[in-house]
Length: 95
Image (cartoon, rainbow, N blue to C red; front, side, top):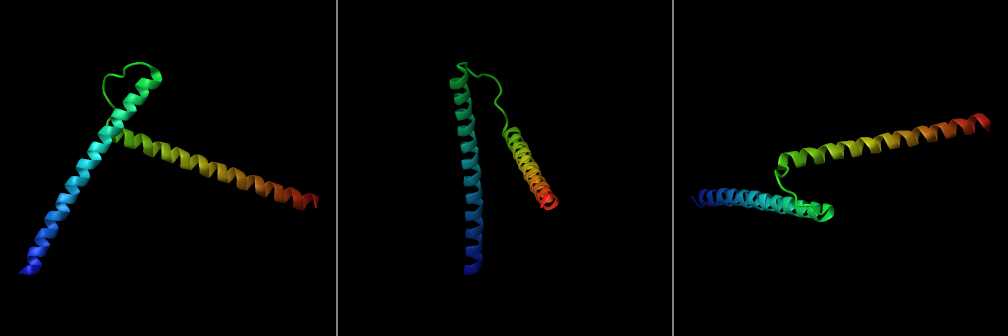
């Protein structure tokens, strides 16, 4: 009986933690959006009005930026490897 009570309390605590986590994430996102808007207003000198970018769109843009960055790094690494191979081949040919 005690174990069942503990399990029930644990279930409620886990649920409460998830709700608090979600509320904090939403509040943090709201702060981010407001800071971003304020920053753009200061930089541009114009008041930013209208629709604010949705969270899913910001996440999608961040994922695309990460993919582009990782692809660029992979391309740079491949170019560097090609240059090393070319240098080694020239050394072996001339040496």
